[in-house]
Image (cartoon, rainbow, N blue to C red; front, side, top):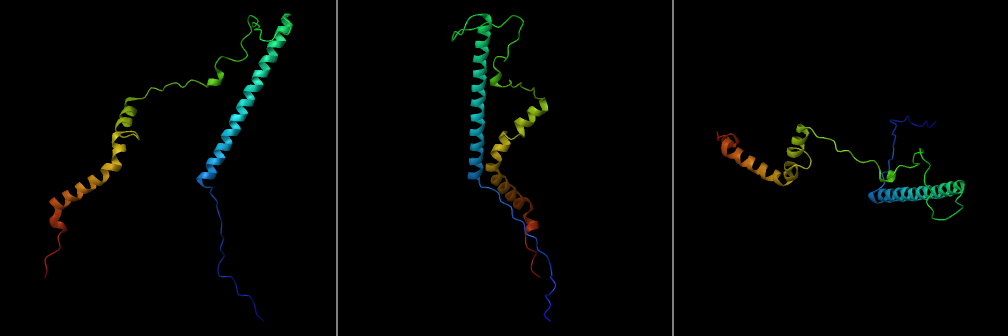
Length: 146
């Protein structure tokens, strides 16, 4: 009888797919368009609600249904929406410590050292090798023949 041989090992394969930059960009543009559309719809709903509120207030005040008429807010009643709420919260500038300022000036990502290092790296290496060969060249020499 031909018996099947016992397996020597088990191999488990897993595949992972990462979309390319074009697919990621398209997905981000789609998300941006959806967010913009939702914002426009929210502003439109808010505008319609404000118009309806003004008409209701005008009808309650006995002014009829005059289009474009501004109805004053009753005294003591706060505004339904604070002015400038769509502009977002104002960014408060955080005071930096002296140590943080020194770090950003000399070692930070926008410092002169960090910006010029990719250009200066080869010159520094070259100078270091020339200096090493000049001052320690004897230790680099081959031993005398026997």
